[in-house]
Image (cartoon, rainbow, N blue to C red):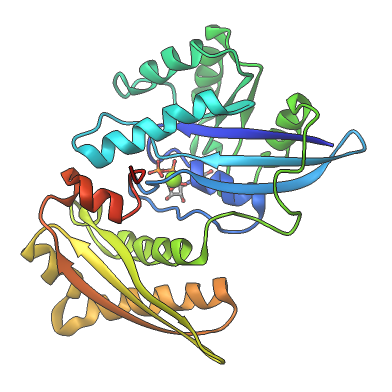
Length: 298
Ligand SMILES: Nc1nc2c(ncn2[C@@H]2O[C@H](COP(=O)(O)OP(=O)(O)OP(=O)(O)O)[C@@H](O)[C@H]2O)c(=O)[nH]1
Ligand SMILES: [Mg+2]
């Protein structure tokens, strides 16, 4: 048996969570067009075969690495970098040459410090002109630290299998870490809160979604319906009215879209109640960060 932990790291919005979902063929990580969507490391378990041997790869989708403006951001970037030290292989995901500021350069410095096998994955090739792809490829090849370089489209599932096969080659002999039918080890409550947050990100504009957190208050599995109560926290009164919308329309839309996805996740009917509360500056509040699951309990 071969098995490995594989970290997926990169700047916000390059498609890390989309790649994880494409690898698993199932949605375990929320993915949106807003940067800083992922806040916790999301584990997804891939079972397959390599050279006639059973294979288990545990992929860790991490928050996008960025210059943090508050404690939540510190936690997110810290977690992503922490992953580098814990894994057997690293996928560094990019969607262009690093010309958008110091971000990628900084990550590259961190990558140079580890001796774990590193793979470069150039994502969103469906949006790239051939010469842009070539420039990106040559730039990263020139660094001389990557074992392989792949060009993929996570969204369209193009060349995703090549990445899996490449990583499988460096997977050491190891145990089966998780049961074969397990796709993620996150509890249903966590996934439910994430689905609600995804719909908020999709329905809200600009600065509002980044200040939003979701807490599941109740989760009661009945015989033919699961009743879920969730609180949406935001940072300002004005944000609360935006989330609720005229005549409660926005919140209703979020609730309906979330309920449909949660029903798919749980495989049963769901009754979902949502409340909106204000918690000012929670992203810098240690207790709130712990309660919302963005900090280890000490
Ligand atoms: N055109 C195109 N879009 C993609 C591709 N992969 C991902 N996207 C889009 O890029 C956006 C960001 O995707 P995510 O998977 O949320 O990115 P992420 O790196 O996890 O972002 P953070 O969690 O914020 O760090 C979404 O709108 C995706 O649909 C791709 O191969 N092609
Ligand atoms: Mg993500």
